[in-house]
Every structure is written in structure tokens, then in C-alpha cells.
Amino acid sequence: MEKRIYVGTCGFNISLARYVRLFDALEVNSTFYRFPTERSLKNWQKIFSQAQGFFLSLKAYQGLTHPISSPTWRRSSLTREELQALSERVGCLKLTPETEEFVSRSMKLIARLKADFWLFQLPKSCKERAGGIKAFFESLKDKFETTPLLGLEIRWSDPDLLEELNRTLSVLPVFDPFINADLTERFFPRLSTLYLRLHGGYERGRINYDKSYSDQELLWLRGMLQDSAAERIFVLFNNLRMYEDAQRFKDLITL
Image (cartoon, rainbow, N blue to C red; front, top):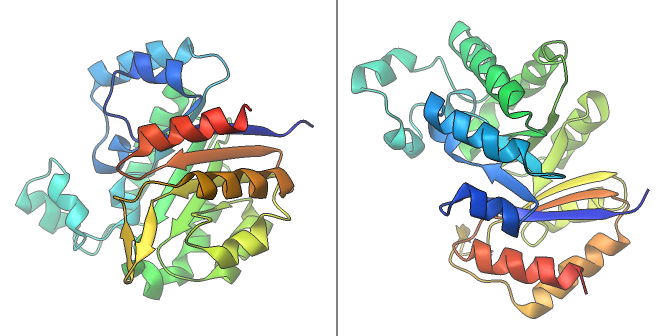
């Protein structure tokens, strides 16, 4: 099988119709903060249905991944009382009636958009609750008529957990090859599919989203992908200059 590299961004703030003409992959991030309105959903359906060979990923709703203590909930449309009612009931891939409802709504969204990928991103605060992660993914096994690819990005170091989930449940490890050298070394030579999120840089213990990738870094990435075992590769830029860097990388891989 010929190697194919898809390039896009994590989120979009330009016209979606314009976006699908520029890139061949997209990770929709707004689904993390809230479920889309029916109006938005119909517009997305129309545009994505006309985008041939396009790769669509949806970021999982924060009710599945992030505890109420996470600052990301400030951007939700929920009232303080509604948030208090969800306390200790959501996040970190807990299995509760509330998260079951979030899964059900997400599955309907995935089916309507014919999404190819469902991304789960867990914050570092979930590290102490990592024991329940496998049970959550096991619970998804028989719920989809057509199962999308599933991926997990964790904000702490546990290569063995990612390895086990991939080996036993085909959950793809999602990571930044510039930041997670250990995961690059472990998974690039083996996986037939790679899903990479490029955040910018890592400085003083924090992600620097303001960083733009140099030509040398993008050339390095191209070489690493060419040498990897992967046949399908999804490269999603998540830095502040994501459009410019994604276009530069797309141009680079077509040379």
C-alpha cells in the first residue's frame, strides 16, 4: 500500500468551505467544549459530504475526558448549578450514567458526519485514575455499526499504557513527535497508522503554542514519516500558526 500523508489543523476559524479546499484533514475541536447546534451540524454535513478523500476527526466532549475542576469548563454553556451536579460524575473516562449519555450523543454525531476518527485527550489530572481507561474503551467495542478509529493523547508519560491499549483494543496513541521522543521511537517503526498533533514546542515544562516550526524541523518530520512503517499518516497542527505551518508542510511533502 502506498504511503499517504494527510495534513490539516486542530480546529478552524475560517470558512469551512474554504478550509476543505486548502487541506485534506481536520480535527474539529469545538465538539470538545459543546455539542454543535443543528444548524451548524447541517452545514458541516453538506460541506463534508462534498469533500472527496477528506479525513475528519472529532475531539471527544470534555464531559468524557476532563473533570469539572478543569478550566476548560469555563467555555461550556452550562450554568454553575449544572456544573455542580456533574461534579465527580464526569471526566477521566469514567463510566457513569452521565458519560453514557455523552457517548450516545457523540455516536450520533459521528454517524451523521461520517467521521473517521474520535480523539480523546486526557489532562494530567487523570493520571491517578488511569486504571479505568481500558474499561472505558472496552465499553465502546460493540456500540458502533461502523467503528471510527479511536485515539488517545495523554498529558503524562505512560508509554506502556498506550502500548497496551493499542495492542488489545486498537486504540491509536496520539502524540507530538517533537515533544514525545520516546513515543516516536516506540511507535514510528511499528504502527501502520499514525495520528500526530503538533503543538508548537515545549519550554520550561509547558507547551509553547506560539512557536512556529522551522524549515529544518519540517524536513526532519518529513524524513521520519517517510522512514516510518505507517501507511496512513495524519498530521494535525495545533499551534497558533497552524495554517501557515500546515500549508508549508503540505507543500513540502508534495515536492
